[in-house]
Length: 368
Image (cartoon, rainbow, N blue to C red; front, side, top):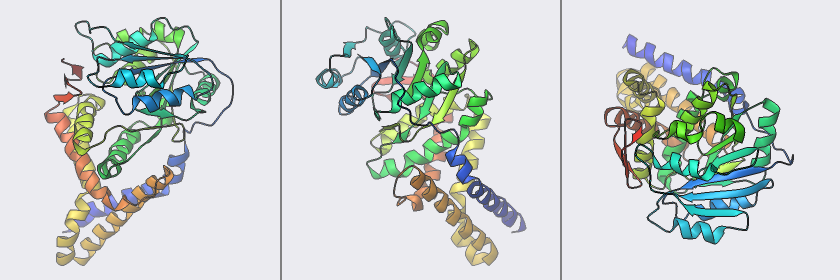
């Protein structure tokens, strides 16, 4: 029991430390609003995004500084193409992607085709489920120019509708964001980009090889950032929850498959790291809840430590929710969300092959 109390004490100390550093951590690396004029071409790859692509196109069209928007429909089997055309104005070009050459994944090909013939100084790649705020584009360009960035990416916020989305997506999303601290990226200690929003100088995009450099990658966004860094470019990452919202997935099954496709690849395909992450997440977010009742009967001190840890976990999730502008009503579910995250990490490592939007992915690459 002494060993159990020691472990629980260490976990309690971890959560106290996270709370003490919350204000600095929650505020650093923030994108500031700007109304500085700019000239940008926005590029959207889209596959089976009916119900979302229209809102994405209209949001881009409402952004000052957008000279042109190119939407490339990646062989969708739904009404994506028609919805994009219906939402377009005179600056928008909507076209269908050509059949994929051998070895190419769909999204990199759609991005490469969207960028072909671009003339603006800045290119902005935006996912088809992203809804930009009007100031997002010019604020990002202003920050890129001020920081000397060749490639700049943003973390926005999530559009959460169903209860599974509200419970699970922030837990997984903040796990990823915690691993890629913007301060470390901006110092050059890490290389990372979020494919929901990637702003890149056109000249440097071409110099780094464009999406041809990551033609078969599942995580083409991270690959593009690494290609840019390898070519000598400056990569920057900022928090901008006000700048855009994204509805990633709509059901538990989509959340499971979407993250299972990406997480193991995001951990560098290192099994030991995946196991350590799985154990660490479960031990620090879920185990205290599941141990609390039996330990409370056996040892009041151990039970009290579990109760304190669970309270701090719930409070931390509440603070995150409030920081992102949500009510915090789902904070109580965070220990269960931790179990879900640990399970996805494990499944991503031991069974990385997954079907997504009618295509197969395995080993960090597209199979079909």
